[in-house]
Length: 237
Image (cartoon, rainbow, N blue to C red; front, side):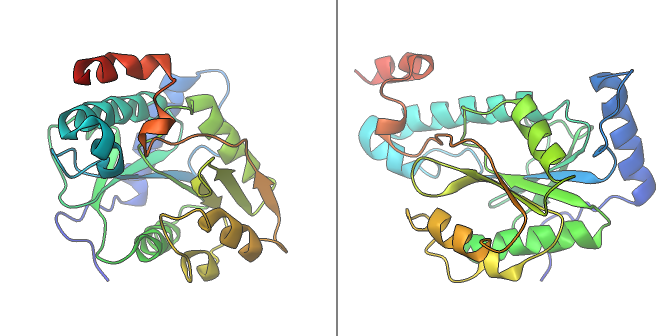
């Protein structure tokens, strides 16, 4: 399989230059052990009206859902742009240039065709093929996560083979590994509350670090009582 759109695999020298720039800006005195060997993959949907946060849009409308998604994208940028690892942004449909993902910081790719498991499997395999040792994948619809959370997840991969962040809806918001395991991407009902359970079954005999449960943003109940999102909900009332 190949990525559609522009292929943007960096050479090892180019990756090192990116990592050097980030580690210097992050902390001049202390460089994390995972710097230079880690990759964060961000799966994102192209922010287009009527094509993102569709379950949320059923309650608050397409325009408000789009504004919330753009807000979540900006949050994701803010917690990843200074990480001392390489960061790839994998677009759902088409790679966008001159958007909020600065191409001096983020490596841009397009997701392959297929279900979510096939897309993630391809992303992880490509990362390991390109020489990364510790690889983590997240989405772009989680407000309840910080840069420190991501750094702790990378640190966990120095001690464990897998790291998993469970979400309240029965899925997961983060998956990381340093040893590829194809079972994680097969025989899952993606988008349902069985994904976390089935993933944990796959990992029951592995060295796993389980992170704190977090809440990703999919439906109205995920945001209705959160003060930060009232600015968007008030526009719909």
